[in-house]
Image 1 (cartoon, rainbow, N blue to C red):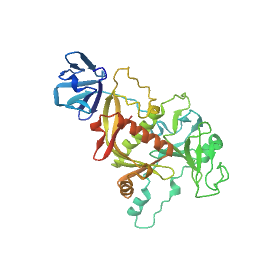
Image 2 (image 1 turned 180 degrees about the vertical axis):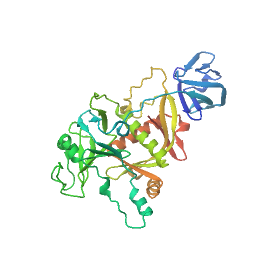
Image 3 (image 1 turned 135 degrees about the horizontal axis):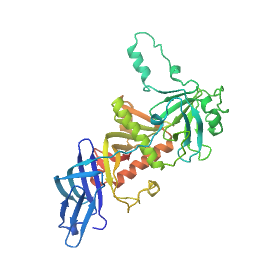
Image 4 (image 1 turned 30 degrees about the vertical axis):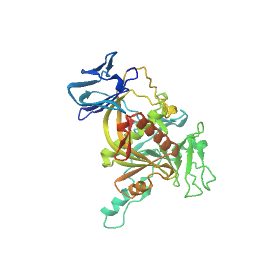
Length: 385
C-alpha cells in the first residue's frame, strides 16, 4: 500500500463527499478500514497505513455508506463532510479595476509592462453582446441606440466578461511598438489615426515574448483579454503566477459569473480566428477537491503549479465541468447544434490560450479515477480557482 493515494470530492453547499482511496491492489485484501473525523486508517495483515485529511476537512464517520471496491479505482465510499476554506482567488480586471486609481498592466506570460501607470476616470461594465437584439424587441420604433454608444471615450475602460476596451489614445504610448498589422493594414494605429483596412483588426503582441494580448478594432479601440494581462495597482510589484493556475482561475471565474448572472451553463470556447476549440458544460462551482494522485506522464510540461508528492494534502476550490474537444473537426454535429442554441454562450480567447485550456482539461481528466472520467459521453474535469 505504499502507492496509496486519495481522491476526495466535497460539495460544499450540500456537505456531501465522495472518497476514493486509490492504489489498493486485490492481493492486499482483506482490509480493515477505520474512519475518523480527520483521518482514515487502512490495516492489512502486513501493514497499517493512516491517511490524514487537511485540517480544514472534517468528516462524519457514522455517515459512511456505499463502501465498495472498484478494480480500476480502489475503495469508494460516500460521506458527510464539512470544509471551511477561504481561498483568495486570482484577481483579474473585474475585481481590480476601479475609477480614479492608477494601474499597470503586465503581460502575464513574461511580466513585460504593456500599459504603465494608467488612470481611468470611468470603469464601466458592458452589457451582453446580444443587447441590440433585446432592444429591438423592446422598442416599437427604430432603435435609438447604436454600437458607437458602447465605445470607450478618452480615459474610459469598458469591461466585458473576458476582455476590456480602452481607446488607442490611452494605450498608444505603451503598446505602439507591440502592434503587428494583419491583412492590408500597413500603418500602426496611433492616437487620431485610423486603420487603412476597416475590415482587418491589428493584433497587439507583447514585444518580449510575442504573446497575443488583444487587437485594435477598426474603430481604433484596443481590446485586451484578461487571460493575457495581469492588472495591478501601480504601487504594487509584479508577482509571477504560474500560467496554468492563472488561466484556470480567470476562465473559471468568468464561467461562474456568467452562470450566476445570465443562467448560462454551456459555453463554446473559440479562438480569435473563429475556430471552435472546446465545448464546456459547467456542472457546479462549490467543489472542494483533495487529489494526491499524480499522472505526470501525460502532460509533464503542465506540472508547474508547485505541487509535490511529498507535501501534505491540500484542499483546492474548483469547478466541475463536462467538456468536448473540438479540434480537427471532432464533435462537429454537437458543435453546430450548440452554435445555433441561444442558451449557449460563446467565449473568445487567443488560440494559444484555447489550446492551453484544452491541455489543462485533458490533464485534469487523466488524473481522475477512471470511473469518474466520463459522464453522458462528455469528459469530466476540474478547473482550480
